[in-house]
Image (cartoon, rainbow, N blue to C red; front, side):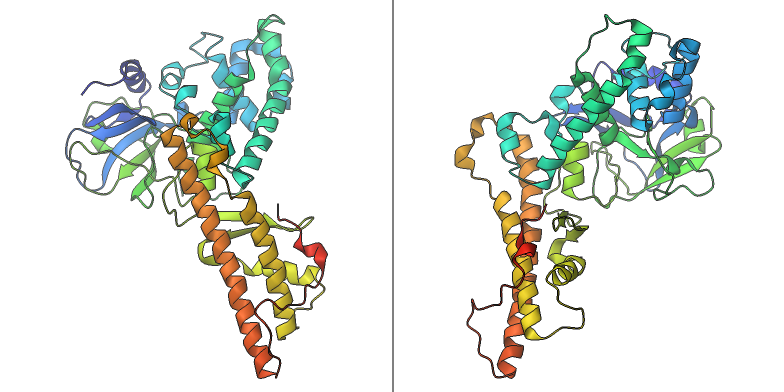
Length: 421
């Protein structure tokens, strides 16, 4: 099985630095970038990848490397960069400076996808972007692009100090590295040798070379395991010891020729599309974020899971007390919230006749459809919830001797019916 040209030097780099790849694993190119398959049957609970801590790219290691390479030349400039700026700047230095003593991740970085293999919305063409309508992902993509441009401008003095004012490169390089980080980073809490986890409040995104090479499969059983030394399976293959390590253990048995997957966790398609550049059909972890103007941000999932907090906020905005549960109050809140939901549905109603679909890549169209379908399903479930509440209110009204027509309601406070953000 032939591997991409970048893999041979990457494997040499892995061995030199004491990392480890199971000898049955092979890298193959595909439409979405690169996948990992096994050429031998894998037994249950097989360790497949190991990365020594010293190869992990963290904001701290990035800052230390640049200080080591350039000394006092940068004076305090690095102190003004945030965590992402430090990591992005460190990575870009590999393409501008060849001091491998400090910038040692070159072979790894050459395995990462180029712009043509990145499928986050920043890399959509104009016709593909239209398919996102006024969705949250469309709005967040614009916001993210603006933030990354500001961060590049703030980091520019570091590059000018080192390479002079004549240095020129476009923001596309910065955006590409930022995309690598969003699509491949893991929480630094995984590196704890006592209790690796992904929920520590002081955790920061870090890059784990070698361990980030596998694609995601929902609910796929894997374990992230730290060890002070190489695991016995790695030592048995002659790998060099250079710990401590973060390891990936693959639990299911797997037949030769099949792809070996990782598990990125229970994320919704909005996060997958924005950060990773793919989506899953009928993703049960899908959510939508909604807010009333000047109100809190609410996250609602499929089957209207989590709808009660925004229901309560609509009620409060309409001046209805919590204890007021009579049918008139319920009818007003249900109508107010359903109007908001319908407005949000409108911005997800994309008319393909207005789009040149020949310009839309089939892979991207599938990713967008998965995301937009999930958003519409959640909004529909919210509308259905409101309808159930209205139906219940009508029954209570009839019990009280009031017969309401299907479209009869008290509109209440019009201010709360504005479109949700």
